Image (cartoon, rainbow, N blue to C red; front, side, top):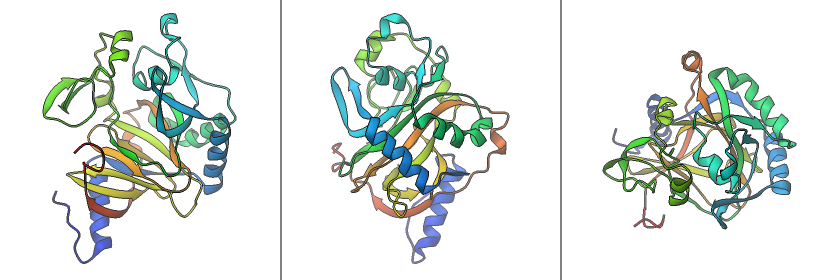
Amino acid sequence: MNIEVDDDRETAYCEIANALLDKDLLFASAFNICPDLQREIIRLTVNTGHDFPVEGDVVDPFWLGVGLTKIVNLPQEFKSTSPSFIEYYCRLNERFYWEWVQHPIVPLVQELLSPISRFFLRFTRITVVLQKPGMHLWAHRDLVPGETYDNLQSEHLTFRGDRKLTFKGSPAFVKAFPDIITDSHSKQNYLNLKIPLSTDPYSPGAPFVIWNGTKISYSSQNQLFFLNEALIEHGADKVNHFRGVVFVDGFLNLRTWCELEKLPVRVSGLSKMDYESEGRG
């Protein structure tokens, strides 16, 4: 599909939103979260959250977060490794089982997930992640180690390329889990459920996806939504308030999945993607 904006901008935006839905790349659900609850989850996260370690002592500067679930059967030899680091890469590893942690945000999220839980066999990694004010979140993909993808540059990086490779994750993860082979990501259609969060009820922030070289700004309008983590890159431009999502990973129930009502997101802007400004020129 060639993405062009004609004189009827809103019509063009609607066509793009519907195309993203039709291709299972980005779509909202009929389940929503009220602004007051968003602000309460953000307040609790700001008060109790932590920076996310990328590897070792290195932290991700963009995010503040709280993990709401943990792996129950993580082997003892890996427990000294950063839990956030291991849990992120193992979020769709079928050998691990997960349980809720003790945290005041947990019952709030459990209630939100209750009506949509019938579309999942089980949940795995559930994490609140807030984009810090004034921080730009670069375009990226979230891949699963052990899965083979058609468009990689390297087996250790998520950037797009023209090679069919098995993604292995970071070198440190490979040392811990050297022989993972899986198709769990593709079985989930590469989809991740997200619960939107913003301290400003009139601004969800500035999230975007990249499709066919075009940067598409969007909002789910307080609806829980699904994003394809592998086939499109995603990120968020900086804003002056806390915004983010609750990441909800899990195994889809394919028997009930066809009953999920899928709705288009609201597209609010288009621009040509500038990879140089993303640090990738």
